[in-house]
Image (tube, rainbow, N blue to C red):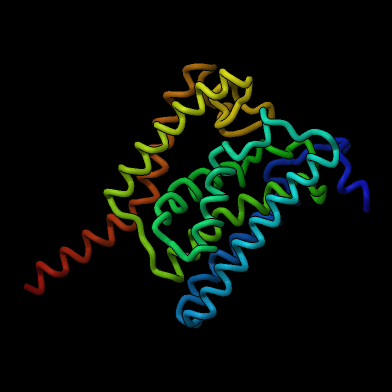
Length: 247
């Protein structure tokens, strides 16, 4: 059992979209699809309980990573501060749920789902370990939950982004990236992966070398955010069209 918590890399690394990885992906996808069924069944108390349980699990899972890293002496400010997009959004989501203040939903929706989905499908952190090692399972569970909570709030609770929030989140993302760029330079880190690409295979590998992939990431982020907003844009257009016809 201890070998699953060892800091030593496993003999084989994670096979992206291999049978083990796909099994984890399918489990989460089934949970996300089940939300469409439960949205008409759970009452407010049940919704609050499930949302809180997901947030607590997310927090415990992340705290476990820091304890594991500290135990093995690999915790450092260059890699472990909550400054990567998913790490930052993770704590925003937990904070939002725990204090019952859903004003941060837009950040959770766009940056949580948009940012974590790529890391869930092609994880950079922990990819040198194979399932069921703790490190890669922690990564997959963390990103799966980062996606799950805003999806829950969207499908079950009925929250939705707006065009104004789409613009606001994109602007704040760029401001945050500029801040992290200078922080990386100051402490020798690679938060947001804007100092260099991740060492393990990710979707970023198809982009140009540094620094040209940074503006390309801007375009990719804009496209992802817009795609995530399309369902609501279509819904608004259909409702507007229906109102015009009934007038």
